Length: 168
Image 1 (tube, one colour):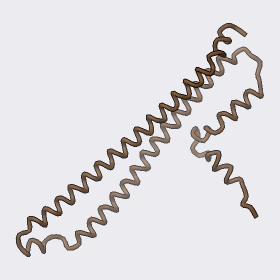
Image 2 (cartoon, one colour):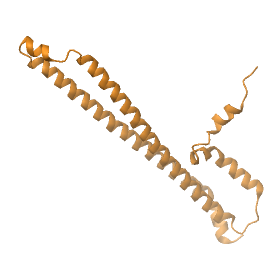
Image 3 (spheres, helix red, strand yellow):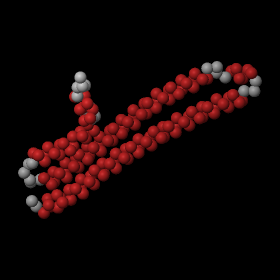
Image 4 (tube, one colour):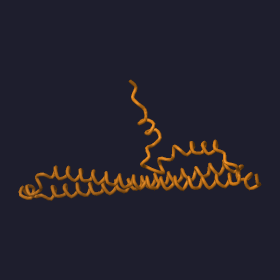
C-alpha cells in the first residue's frame, strides 16, 4: 500500500465523520428554511386576519344609526368562516410546496453526500483488490438512506411492514 493510501486510511474516520457532519448541517439548514417559510406564511395569515377583524369592528363602531348598522352584511359570520376555510386550503398548498422543496433539498444533499463518500472510499481502495464483503458492508450501511435518493422507494421500515403478514 502506498504512503498516500496509508495516510488516507488513517484519516478515514475523521473524513467520514466530517462528511456526515456536513450532511447534518445541510439537512438542519433545510429544516430552518422550511420553518422560516412557515413562520413567514403564518405571520401573513395572522396579519390579514387581524386587519380584516379590525375593519369589521370599525364598521360596527362607525355605524351611527340603524340604517348603517342594517347595511352591514347579515351573513358576515359565514363570510368569515368561508375565508378561514380558504386560508386553510392555502395553508395546505403552502405546506405541500415547502415539503416538496425540503424533500428536493434533502435528496440533493444525500446525493452529494453519497457522491463525496464514493470518491473518498474510491480514493482509498484504488489499486487494492476488490473485497466483496467490504462492498456488501458499505451497501448495508447506505441502504437505509436509499429511499431519500428515490422517493418512490418506500422507507425501509415501511417496506418491511408491508412485507409482513398479520398474525393469525
